[in-house]
Length: 166
Ligand code: RP5
Image 1: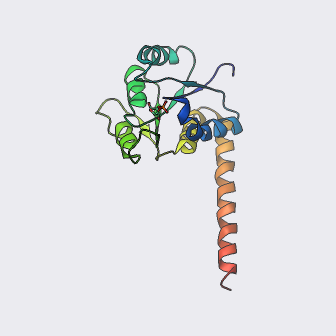
Image 2: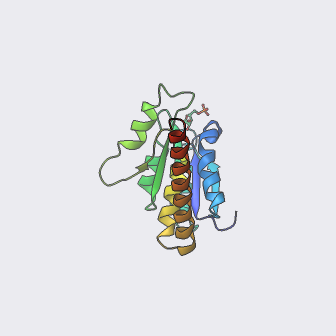
């Protein structure tokens, strides 16, 4: 995609089934993004180059997903000043997901990572859109409509549940 606003990175292609939902939300919202495998441990210099160049290349938000000893989001956040959203992935080398969560969540003061739920990449995509929508009225409208649709769906579910007992 030309002039990506959001960078989606993940530690391995094995993270893609989880990270796909972030890409899907951005695509549906017509937000330009790039998506790459960048490993903190296997390609540390690529990670540094990616984070150092991200702002100059026009990225506004980075979504970083990783599993196990998940250092990618925090290390990227330590290099760039862009907002970084971390997605803990329950991966093949993850004990039960808590390793991924805590590795991404428990950042030291000064280097924030906005951590979403385990495997919660859809919310990472939505949060990235909310950040961009502070300066994009059309995107803000899209997100407002998205919330209205959720509300309508919940009300319909409630009517369905109520109907079973009336
Ligand atoms: C992490 O190790 C990756 O983010 C992935 O979640 C996990 C396993 O990677 P693979 O062995 O599947 O490549 O760095």
